[in-house]
Image (cartoon, rainbow, N blue to C red; front, side):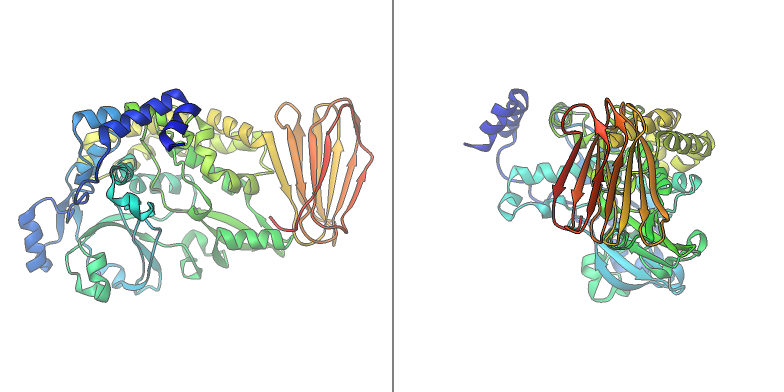
Length: 511
């Protein structure tokens, strides 16, 4: 069955729109989708090529190629096109003088961006990251010459090119570690980039501190002893029961994500500062890559339909209201489940109200004023108003965020030995406690409420674990025990009326 007809059978309206789009836009991709340079004035661009040292700042357009006609915008949305297209003035990066002189350490980034790690004379690492994206690189090669390529390329217009500039002061005011980016232009044929000058020159970048190793342990992070990525953090967290995530710190960071509508907070969007506290090791989050803050996708006919809850919910757009908190959690649901299983409704509410107090009108206005002048004149007041509105309702959004998390909760041990204690206190409340078997120290405690939680899933992972269930009630929350090791011991003297209120599965060790 052809793909378009399969879509039509699954959802007639979505299928109809897909067929209409295929009819209107079938054909080849646009030639030269991207412009050769972001510099707005060709004469200035020629001067930069011939005598670059005489120019300290330049007027650029972050993405003039996102300009579209009336019909296209009706169908696919105006998005952030005006901010991409409007000319802004930015400094020309002096690679040999900024931060005492920058040297390239490595070139990386995702498939869609160029991300250069550079080292300054202060031995700090810095990230030089392109503002524009190249999402078509993720497409299979045969599709890159079709209309589908144009459609994919245009998705970058849903991102706000200067979101990072606004988010940084908001995060700092909320006491969340955050790099402070600056917008820069790298001139053509920048000799200081050596063999990489052709790849890296003549582009618009964000330059910011890079928190990815011990060299970044300064300022607010100076008490940490290391910085690691999420993969390494989870490996240690599940390997040893004296490693833990600071769940309140992560919850606070996630509330900021809700505030700015950042829908793309997957595992790769975090680094973790590691602290030693009373013999234990604690991980605290450092968010990075704010490309999806203020995301605006669904303000066209087709894109509005595509982003509905019954279609592709994750393409939820930023506005002054929290219309769909769950949509902002889709790409982060795995990490949220592992890093927030202990945070209560009261704690979420307290964190939200603290953030509401910290992010005053003045701080929000100052943050938005970090936009380039032309962009601020275009949308500064409107954006500030939306952020203020979301701040005012952050406590309600936090409650909704909590309610989504609370429905099904993972309680995960480690590859060492733990004791899991489940006590059915009454028909409405179930208490879960986890202790290290070696010394009896508490590693987890929470009381669950039947009106909020449908299922609690306990994972012992490795080691010789004990599961103890007590309490006799008429009604209760379903408890699932994943018995990772044959040497685990399960003792159940609880009783709940009805069927399948406790289920035991056998599975391989590890999460």
